[in-house]
Length: 472
Image (cartoon, rainbow, N blue to C red; front, side):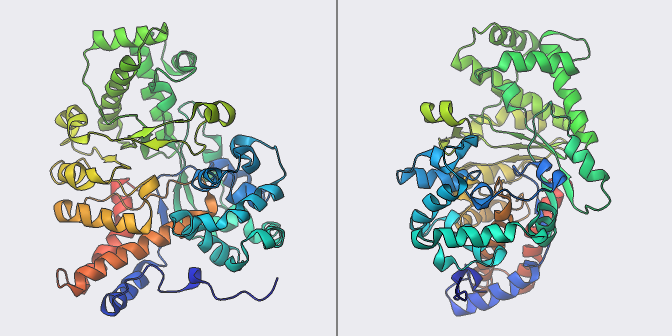
């Protein structure tokens, strides 16, 4: 390859304000946090990746196929998902997938994914991003492949190079968490890799295989109890197993934000109906709302932080789900009512000592209308960072503006990268830090806060907030 040309991905002023006075302040603020360790309390990287520490197979498998941010947009330009090796498909060789990506690279201009990928190419792999195109696809594939063959690009080496201190995974309640135990016991591995209890598949009665999964759960962990009581006991016991293996939080991808306080007989009736396969879609929503309330009750008891990611219509395209499975790019946001939906949960637990509840949203309108006002009253509720379609520079600036005037800075969760794409973690966290610096710099030059306070706030947002909110 020819000598690498200067890239905007290496520009020290990327994402900084245009105004010279604000830019100067933002540079100073970013310098305070740019080198701080990464705290990632919610994501989807597999712990086994670090436990096994095997080389990444190839550039496409590492950077393209697992990242639905990337594959969905290429698919929208007309490329079939099997050509992107989505969902474990192997219809083409990885080099062909890379060629499809390079041919579609121009479609990522202006997107958050494009920003992260450009940063990865330049700052992680030392690849000239000006050569990411159809003409040079084999050349860039080979260049990244050569990097992946070196010891510096093994998962643990990258973990250290990325300066990751804490990385949370997302795990099935029946996972034995052996990879987490192995990492915790390994004296050669210095980081913290924490499991996260994600029970969606056991709470959504309308998901395929729900009754069989629940039967297994109760058999394994129900302490001999049966019915709804055994089901609750099993969930409590598996939460305890996660805590014993380092977990600090639970995560819930609920369809709505509805929470519901049901009496025991009504809950039992819904549970039994679902096990018989007789529950309607409305019943499924009621049961999930009941279980969100129960998850909060359990969190008050065992201390796990409860996060909620509602408002996504999962598997919007049935044929794609059938062919490639979940989390393959066709989950689409829907509107959510937080104020009414969360009332039952917050009425009973919103002021409970030690309870931390973090709701996220993909609907920008609720930040200022609902979530910030709720966080401005309930001690238990913290504002979840911009998530999924909103974890982009402009959206993050809008988020900070929307929530700060009502809830201030102290009620924020800290940045959440929520990624399956391991190499994108530093780029995403750096984008957040630069965005926070830009927002605070504007307040400084508008004489709304002092520069000294802005310096204290940005360190809190980047480092102290995620530690505080996620009990780290």
